[in-house]
Amino acid sequence: MVTRTTVINDPVGIHARPAAQFAAAVTASGCTVTIAKEGGNPVPAGSILSIMGLGIKQGDSVVIDVEGADADAVADKLVATLLAAE
Image (cartoon, rainbow, N blue to C red; front, side, top):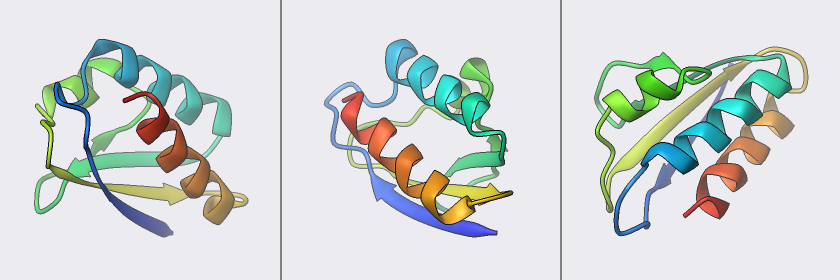
C-alpha cells in the first residue's frame, strides 16, 4: 500500500467537479483507493458522494491510500489530479 498526504488549497474545498474528476481517475487506475481527512475514516475514492461526504475544506489535509499494480505512480497521478482540479 502506498500513502500520500496533501493539503487542499482550493477556497471552496473539494466540491462536485473535483470530486468527479478524482473519482474518474481512481476508476481508470484499476487500483483500490481510499481517501480520508487526516485523522478521519477512509472512504472509497471511486465514489463522488463518498468524497463529497467528507466535507473537505480549504486547508484540510487529505490522505490517499492506493493498493494495486504500480501503486506509487498511481498515487502520484491521483494527487496531481486532485490538485489540478482546484
